[in-house]
Length: 82
Image 1 (cartoon, rainbow, N blue to C red):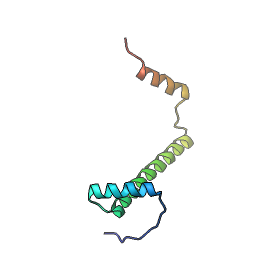
Image 2: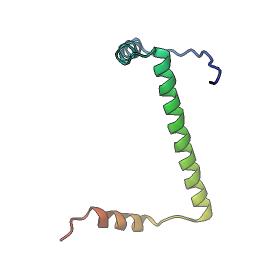
Image 3: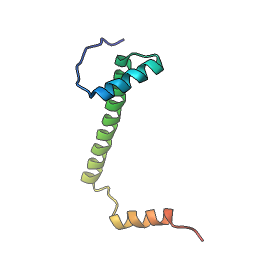
Image 4: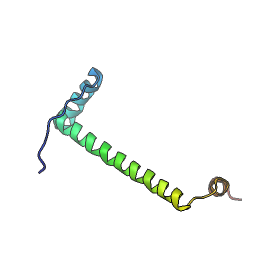
């Protein structure tokens, strides 16, 4: 198990109350819930930044699709079929 560290953050009292209720209902500590929320948030942000970088690289490489082609493909997908 990785070494844990203590961090401090200010949150609204309402959020703290909700966290207390959630912790009690889940049978977990507030620290555990905050740790899991941060873990999820960091993973999501890392995925987003990787996708942005992939898009930027595609643009640099000239791997793009014309706007009109995207609109036409979208309209084919969402248009009612006879």
